[in-house]
Image 1 (cartoon, rainbow, N blue to C red):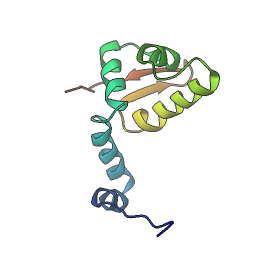
Image 2 (cartoon, one colour):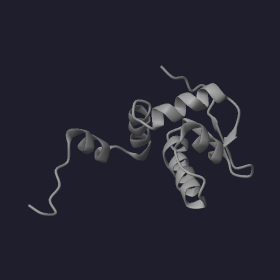
Image 3 (cartoon, rainbow, N blue to C red):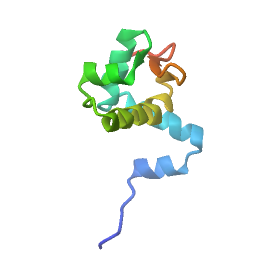
Image 4 (tube, rainbow, N blue to C red):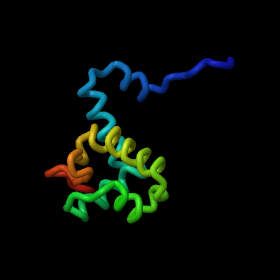
Length: 104
């Protein structure tokens, strides 16, 4: 019927977890899903802190418009900083890979 949704087993498992469990689950999923996987690999290779603009240019994630850059920054903060793959220095506006992050 219109408006009905079906929750998958993975969705049920996610909804039952506490916040830290949800973050761990998202972390596991992110490392194997695009564009997260490509961004993580890129950042591990870079090692130095870089701007969202540089990430966008190098990976062709977005154009140079302020709206696109803002969306990309939010995406990185919401997904890859939250799940512990990246760190963000708000004063400098730079992202870097968190120590100990490895790619397989």
